[in-house]
Length: 486
Figure 1: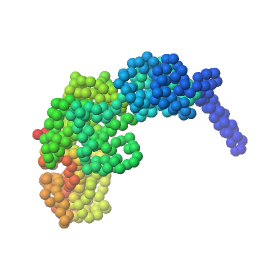
Figure 2: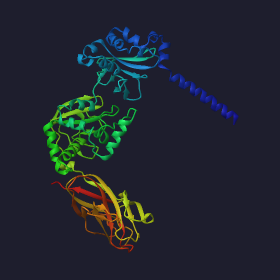
Figure 3: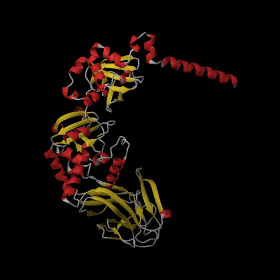
Figure 4: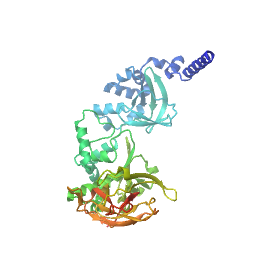
């Protein structure tokens, strides 16, 4: 055993030595090759290079030459003097702009052109993320001299300056005075789409820390996508005023709230929420349909594109119009039976079964069954968000694969709890429907109309009005609410 251990130790030592040799430090490699550049720090190297002296002068002017003289390791993508001459004067109008410009060329730690990854997302000191592609491009700039080592890092010489871009949210903020859609999105700083928004915003206001990656300060950023987040990439479609207002007006009859203003607000929100997508698409790669976070399939007509705006966290398309048919906008609501919000009375856990099943064709599904509970009119409660002010056609799949007899159950929509536990003033009570044995089909059970859009907190699956076991069973795979276009 001692002999085997010695052999193992010798092998591991040789292996470790080989790894050290094969993974030698690039600065050591350059030092062994007699690279005199390693005697200078990055700041001195950039200033002393004739082709990059203009950027070196800007380092001195902004004070960042001292940062690049420190002992930390940096990578700098250095624009040539010709590239600096092409920078628009408006980019460098004041010291704040100049500093941001410089920081957009510097990253902490070393990024060599040799990498196992085709594309590396680099966190620049400007807090922007730029893509270092194939070791020969950063963003849209070509690298003309790669891997130039210095005492405290390395630099790459590039043919085009990395002018900082606005992100999508910053761009929308600038557009707000002249664009209705942008203006509405900014107004959601002060308007809460959902009750939980106010708590999140209060948390943000009272926090002394920088709020993580996702913003809590605006209902759009909170509920859709944080278009202010530099780490992710998005595509956004900004619609011209007339076409945007047309979309809002089309939705208003389906999002009726307590007042005309609140109806307009919700119709506006449901319009804009489907214009953001969690991936960046260039114009040439745009599909003909994109699916929003909320499941709406949005057709993209390239003939409606007025302008493609490349931004730091994705791309924005200015659109003359984005026509989304109501058939796509008005989503069907599906409520899963195995996800109840509560039960009507008593502790019936011993009678409640959450089941993982398969249909005769092998389709897996989960459902709920409550059996032998001995309670007349026993109820299972559900809720649903974002329902429209329209008529709904209701379907269910309710699988009775245990009992040989047919039983009945019904669905009650809405209502108010009374002190005695009963429910009064429902919006609708659909008729009792037979649940025969071994029927796996989807069944139409009736319809109801919502006069006001929003959340339904009380949807009740009701057992028969009998205490007889086998006659008061409840079962549900899912409910499906299909909105009717007016």
